[in-house]
Length: 525
Image (cartoon, rainbow, N blue to C red; front, side, top):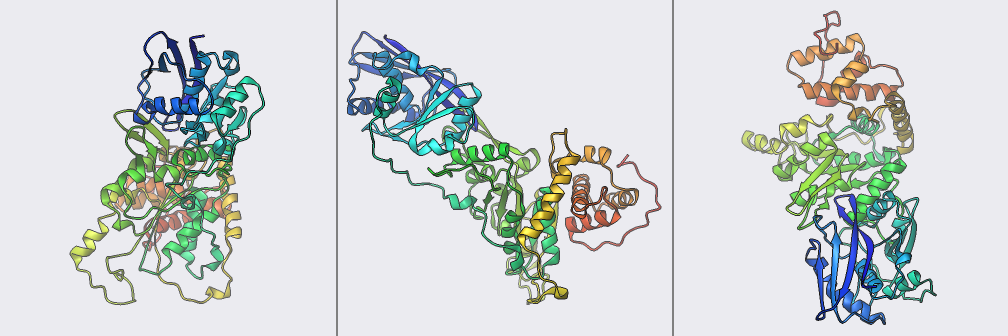
């Protein structure tokens, strides 16, 4: 047989596309041609495959060989097509029976000696093959554990081309040395939630309320205060308050981490919300994703369904920080490149921490601020108004006394996490049969129409909006926070108490409750 085909998977973002790998052996001078929009690393597959086939004890055809990757209009990038190309070529040469390749996808990069190296994005590729009703997938041994996270498809982990050929021929599979894992460009510690407990935080009653409310409703959070006041300490304990991920979210988050190279060879399903804390010098591409050729996910996608914590936020370049505007609203990020447009999920909780000024003493009693008014203005403007307007909770954190307030022991993470879980259960029940799960996700008009606050709370927020103390977006976010506070309190509807508290969490300003006898002005009707 001079023509044969196998199947592999191309990834555009997290979206997998099945690729048909065809091999044709015809009369002519020995030459190998690869067609179908391959990138540079894929073009080099011709030499890798030739060396791997010969060093695996097989004969490489000494005729004209044409390798086609279909659909031809889809750009192909990466070295994970190597094994599929080699198997297709050897099937065309009569070494492998074509029927053994039915309903089988093949993934893997070849070494020159025939070893099969691990690849990125194996979980997303396996998901794509399973959704396309493929029955089995052949994958590098180091990627086997993450591929087995996908139900409904049989996974074969292989270490060499010799093992692949034996598997397809139905013969005894030879022993091979265990492969060595490649060094990681990104550390899995980036996604590990800090092992800290909330009972270590003494005082900070308002700060503790802020992170509890943020966790319960999925609200974005801005903590500002002098150095050493406890901003980072509170932010690091926020992750422990979040409940485990659902099964669907776990697969989605794990697929992103696989593509980013964060999953190790002993990968398990990511069940805890990730905690991503990039340095404030992080580049724009590292935050939103990118790279030459096919785009890769950035920090905001790696933080999907978890927390993106940016400490010293004013020190980050303003243009880089402003790229968060669109994903904060939409829950995804699209990275446009000449080769393709990749779409990555990016529904995360943003937590910013900042000092009040360059010296850190403005508005505190710890010393005299040495910053000029111009320095203060420039420093505070580095976090733009549109970004701040998207942050539901904004609290000033001041140094707390090193004593137990009112003789009460501080609550532990487990106690507060139980309240957060109960509040989220109430939200899940309220929003069942809708596309939303948390208060922070519900559009403002829907929340005001279908889930209104009580009359006194509505009048309070109407007055604040009319007085210009709340923008339209700010009004919606206060309503969402008020519902979260009501869920934490276990009451069926937010009252003026929750509305007042939500406004204070939003702005940090003291508020005198206005009279509740004024007529409604129509925003909540």
